[in-house]
Image (cartoon, rainbow, N blue to C red; front, side, top):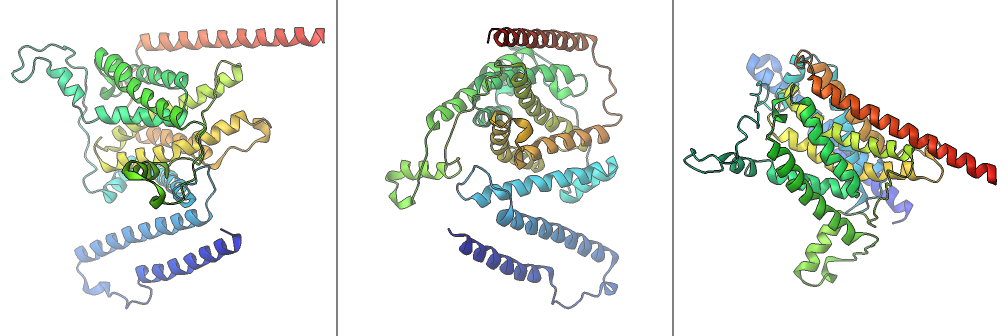
Length: 405
């Protein structure tokens, strides 16, 4: 498509959407006399107008994003789809900033305005109350606790989540570090959130050894299958058979080329920190999901949680790619600009933390267990010592080579 035709299409779309906005806003409709309405009717009308106005604002911004948003490496099914995803994530960032500037009660009322079933304090649910695998006294099952855990609403979602994470990170070492680190995070914060209080077999066998490993395995198999391939799909009618059509439909939502990432975290101390930052950001994303639900009173099955996960999943692949390009650029990080989506993902994670800190005041006063402090203190000391010795050894080797040259 030439630049002239693209300009023509964007201008045509602009004027078309301007006309739609005129109709939606009722700019030429007769003014409503609110004096003749009852207080309840006026409140209902203002509430409806406010929701319609907010939706119109979001739609206008997403249209701008689709036409003028930053380009990404994702080009199918259309670049505009991923530009809209960037726009949605920007709107999520702005919404978080809005919640951050509210008092806690008002922030929960804002969410209740969006979804009237919110605004109710959540009952705390612990999964580690009874860790027996064999329950002979139960009339329905001799393995009741195990059965309830496997048929929990999050079991399949757990596997799919790790499949998506494997598609984004594309490195087994980082994925397993992420997997084990999250279980350690659950142990670290279970004195604040009872949701993290799980049985040992639930955390390390069902989660890590089963769900995580299955998701990582199939995710990496997908990466291996598509690695280094490029596709030029010229039409659905040219795809032979039902399997060909299904495969092409799936390919519409993949990059034009599917390359693996060589993170190589043990190549240097700097690269170790760069890879550790990725894992840390992933852990922040995971932990924020639980803490946001807790402080803002959002039930786990609620649509808002699924919307947040969908937004993060949509931005994850793009932002990971941009961050990888940023740290592996031959120009160096100082001369390379971080991609807009990677920057946005970091910004959203930070603002989510701010929202949790502000609206969680008075909710996390339980002291951290001494064993947890000793564990992380030891990990920090050992890791710091190892990194310093590693860097000193590298400096010595470099100095020895320079002397002989």
